[in-house]
Length: 227
Image 1 (tube, rainbow, N blue to C red):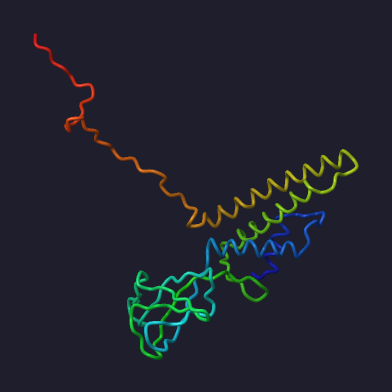
Image 2 (tube, one colour):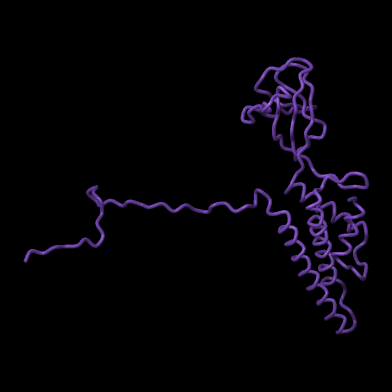
């Protein structure tokens, strides 16, 4: 599937019959949706890097400020794969280059297999979005377009006829509801981002409260009176 296919999907989901949103605005919404999807579900890129020797190696050219290093295999080709401990790996930033500090010494021409995250690609030739998430991406882009349409109809100049005013407000509400539905479709298909997943808010533990003299406190003790 290419960018043109996603554009068609977005148009079908929005149904902007008045053609309020221009094609470049729709494409900007697709770009924003792709950036959000890349943040929620970045793609994993695997590259082989050749060392110059020592304990530092340059980061791949595709590694950006948003990328995360997921793993380094060294030596390459062992079964099971030999992964360097990530806790012992760090990124060193210099004015003109970024390098990886390794916990091992490498020889010149040694190959290291690096895995890192990167943004997804979507244009006329490249499409890295998984097939199962393409509809979700289109839904997210369409939700952005619907938000633009809702704002347009609610803020456009006051029509001269009262019936037109009611129609504008009704269109704004419909597109606002459509925006929410499409955003919910995206979350339903893709799932929440890892950082948004629910975390325990509190933990309940039993408390042992002692009496003032240090012994255990007795609540409502049963008393036995002599006859």
